[in-house]
Image: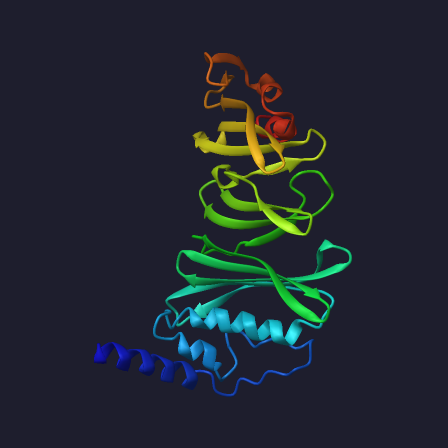
Length: 283
């Protein structure tokens, strides 16, 4: 136990000594220099040093400090990496603006708390104070140059919603994410949204769509189409399209018997949301 305490405080000593000559201006237009944090860690973080990983104090303190500098700006966005002692890199997010309502200024802060967990909170500026009205600790396995947080309309009501990346597979670039509908000044989680791969909303057909590859150089494809009612998704259709052969594709709809079609005609069987992309792919 004594050795554990010694190691922890020795790590803190190293953390302080590594950040010499790092000057941060209170001018809202100044940025931190690359991969550096302010020199002094606040007492609240020091208090939690024994129970938190020392390495992951860095991104939390970076985002909290950056927010204190940028919070007066009308708009600011930064999604970047923090280098944790050359062991791994860590996602951090700070976004400030009128994202969810033209009359309400919001701030989104996110950072890794360990190698598989992302902490995210949303604040709103209300009567001169920043008030927290959303927070979540989420499984997050991304270690790549991705946009972790996205503000996008996911249900066609023309009100932006919140989407946070969960995982990315570099092979064929498959993304899995969490999503929340912004409704009546609250965030409502879309149930099982993180079971969809590469989910996209189509405002014309008012459907959620999912696409994943099954091999053959991305010519074996699985498409799913969903209806979204409030925060619940209901699968309408699932289409398997395998174009691994030179002239024909195998098609199966809702797991019924597979049939063959000419490769040049296969795009007509996939959901409307993907037809043009599949047609071009199979030319």
